[in-house]
Length: 245
Ligand code: ADE
Image 1 (cartoon, protein in one colour):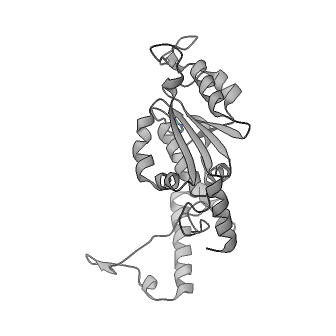
Image 2: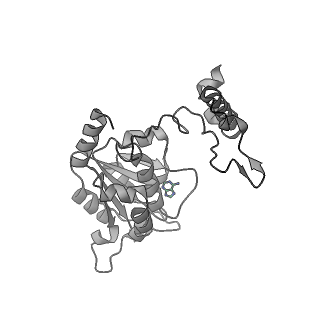
Image 3: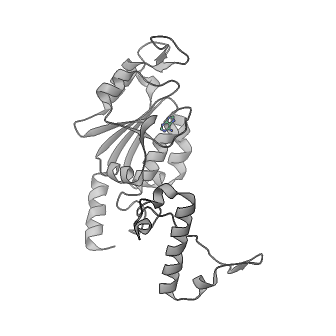
């Protein structure tokens, strides 16, 4: 580790990124927090991540957090009171509140990198038909979707967002691993990887990878990235430099 990387990591350990996840289903995150690199980052003090049950802010004795929508229609809507109480209790002037919702802006590597620079995030997971619009209007800074499909609630989406942006926090990936050559940073998908044995069940590894010729290997890998992206993700390919050559 270089001197500047060391002092950056040291600074981050003294000022861990604070994350509060608000959900009705906190147990959904147990495995994620216990097993993953995010779990390790919590243990080592790189992340100060807490999960809160929204029900703890319900005001009545039955701990009700939702109600029928005004105007009619199917499903239930999360009530404003517990959400206002929870967010107002957790936030400070530096906090950013993100609502996970299928109608938010689509999560990208760029958004993940931006988010990793925040001091304190409150991640709000909705459920069923949504949350009272006044919460979105008054308390939410950003709305993010993890893809064009609808989950039963935003808890897994919050986990996806945390997992994704944590990789940009210096020190998170262990040895200062470079993020520059992976999928999406240059709008090209990653090249195929192989490891030992060189021949498995009669399936050989491409000869070039065994040659030791790193210039040729880099060329081969780059060609595979172009081929893959053009075929699977023409939308990404048209944004890459390769499509303008
Ligand atoms: N909640 C339900 N579906 C979601 C999605 N696709 N992204 C973020 N939050 C969600």
